[in-house]
Image 1 (tube, helix red, strand yellow):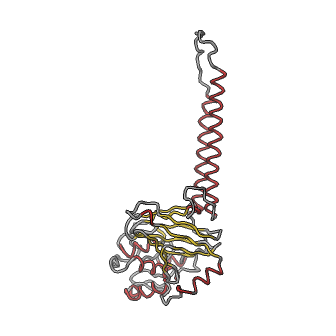
Image 2 (image 1 turned 120 degrees about the horizontal axis):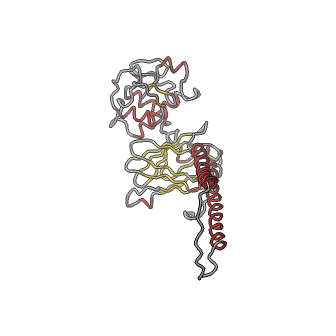
Image 3 (image 1 turned 180 degrees about the horizontal axis):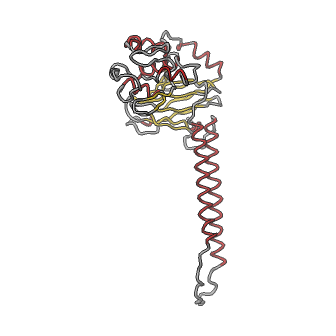
Length: 333
């Protein structure tokens, strides 16, 4: 294992950006540190009392408005520059890239489990192709965990009962350490995993062959089967028409208009909440008659349903915006 306390080599675009922020803040801070300390030393020497017996009174000190404005304005501008630069990098690092592949991460004491779109599940090892953006959709089965990639300079808490996200841009092949950074019990120190960044050809071969060639359904197909089995398609359609509930077609990523005038985006967390607590957000124009699926659908089942709903929104810019959205009066589930 690499030394976790050593400076880690940047393995992604996000690491380069975050390093640049820290270098900028450190360089500016050091400049003003040496400037202030240098001035303190200069004034201490320049205006020192030269004779111990000298008892000359100190002259009156008068204010200087221009000087006061300058020493307030400069630090304020420096702090503002820190904030703006840091925010721009934060926004870029936390914005999903077009064409990213989704991988579900489930944390529990004391292990990480990775679920791929094709139905495969791996423990303690996450594999991704180099050069392709990845979106990690993370949740916990028990307590709060952390997901920390030192070589990517990324960390995200993983919470029970909701989704959190992490966006990877792996630019360099290799094997990188993953740590849990939230104390989660006596085995916390052993909760580690590996991120393996592979050439696209090797990744495709790994995904298709060996022990991973399973008969398991792809995640989206399993989600479709769950919706059919649970009776969801009796109230919702997949062709764009509305029934008792709004259509599933184009739902994921769409702006949903709620009772009371609010508007939310139908992301993973919205869909999860709609399945477990359907009365929390009522779609405008539809009755509150949907039963809860809490206890009937596991977290893995919900992930499969979300994967299927995403396929109904692919190629539609996040799912049916504009005139189509108006016709369908929003959507939920």
